[in-house]
Length: 473
Ligand code: FAD
Image (cartoon, rainbow, N blue to C red):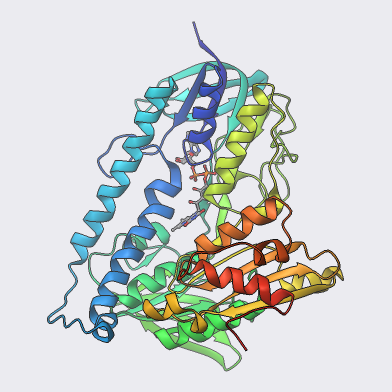
């Protein structure tokens, strides 16, 4: 006899595992199917984010930043450190330990909340049935009142740079280098390319980033993007804009990259090449032809604002549907869907999904950019505060970057917050909270901010919107 559940979730990434836990909390009999096998050969929950995405990349970013600081940042504080060296396998091992702790934590949360964890590949059949193929090749049919598809995404591969075992790699391979490449190429100047490029740059690699677009960080506010490019260039990241990679050739354990830019056809040779040109929805063998779920023209599962697919009772969330490919967006969709299944009226505010790039300085934003508002014909005021004028930033020797707040010219309602600099992600989250409550720039300006904090830069930017900033001329 097949098992029956109120909710079956396919995929245990930040979308799926959060949806499963919330559904179980709401009293729904819930199962979650996950096929991913970790380095130890056992099923690992947590999806891309915990296993090969957000968490491992941040672990390497933090380790490499500490190394960089020990080498170059301590001197100014009067701290002399001699003979600093980097043990790359130890750094990778630390990253693996964190991953294991967190993926094990998800398994514990499943247990504590009564989520049935099923190992195997899930495929949606007609009539809200899910076929599970277990690792030993057996199949079982599970019946569900509701199905949540949360199968995530995969790195995009490009014909000019097919992956090899250890020279041309995707983001997952770039988390596993056992030594610092002398010369590293990165195809793609987006979030992942910049974060991984930064890790290996800080550890001493000569890094060239190939970006096909002429604009750097096209999704970010132009002023912030300009500042970022200037800073990364100073750090030694060579960003080549308008550079289209046309081919690769492996020769004597190196890769020759052919590319064309405004100067014509060129070649550069690297020890490693990271392909980070984006991710695509992962729907391989997920949907039986007669299951009724529609994909759009880009292979994304079609859903409405509440993540309902074209089949009643079947939902899809996270990277496999439209919108930003971000863990927090996936998780909030998971909560929304679980609560709606339980009869609640949950909704998600897609206008306020923050974006973060965890380079140094961090880059983060929420809401509209100046260029978007111009295109929409909205009149606005801007307040900018540079970290160079922040006492806290000076004390931390971290004065690069700025906070920028954009507010509606008529109502003063905050429309966007953009930060490049220390604690950018945390400051932008403060902006997001304010925006969620419909705050004006003046509201933030009238609040008391602790001194000395990085947050004061947000306060001053809010004051600057209406020309009242105190600490900048
Ligand atoms: P996933 O996390 O991809 O999880 C989907 C899961 O479904 C996988 O475990 C997969 O094995 C499983 N699955 C797929 N098909 C099936 C099937 N048929 N049966 C059973 N199981 C299946 N986002 C951030 O917000 N912040 C960051 O700092 C950040 N850093 C990143 C760094 C890197 C290097 C990468 C690659 C990504 C990063 N992301 C970051 C993006 C983030 O990882 C994704 O947006 C997030 O993981 C999406 O969650 P998801 O649940 O939709 O899918």
